[in-house]
Length: 116
Length: 115
Image 1: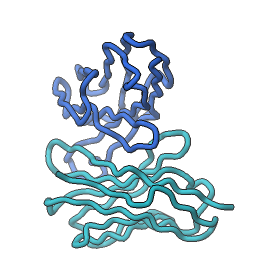
Image 2: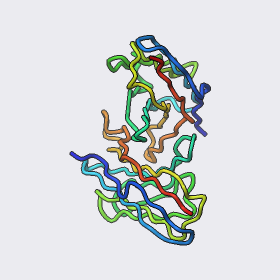
Image 3: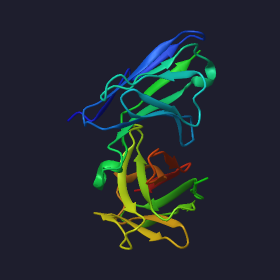
Image 4: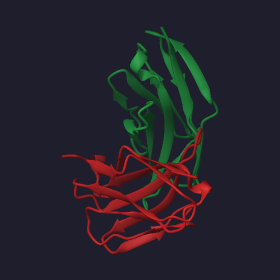
């Protein structure tokens, strides 16, 4: 299993540009999440999904959109990039409430985004 | 609302010694999960250890163990025989058993290993 994969690893955007951060998992997990981590800070939840076709806002959703058309993929869209969105973005997945270690969230390697 | 507090922004320990990282949390739930995640310079978030609140026995994973005090809402991480590879940011995290399954992270403790 590759686990949780994210692309790209690093990206520079100009203010006002748009981009999509890709996230995929091959563990057949129901739950997927997007976090951002600002320098010296913990993780903040942007959006999450409890299954294909279902998404919900987290703590800091403004400026972002998500979709979940399949169990495997959970892309994060930035429509009009702003300097405040400079951060490291992590995607994670978990198996939900089925018991055992499936509740644990498994993280991707992160995408570093710089908005200039 | 649930909160997770890590009161030690940075800590240092001599190689081969033992260090304890503190974490406290606030919740009104009786059943929940607690985690310690490690974030090395590579920025990958790696699960270190996991504890179910209904279990009285403290979780252990090789050199890593926790001291889970449910009444005090404390969840400290002990690292024995510290190694240079243990240098990282450590995050304490909490999650309920509710369907929304959101995880709440503390702000982290940066651990330095002194050779």
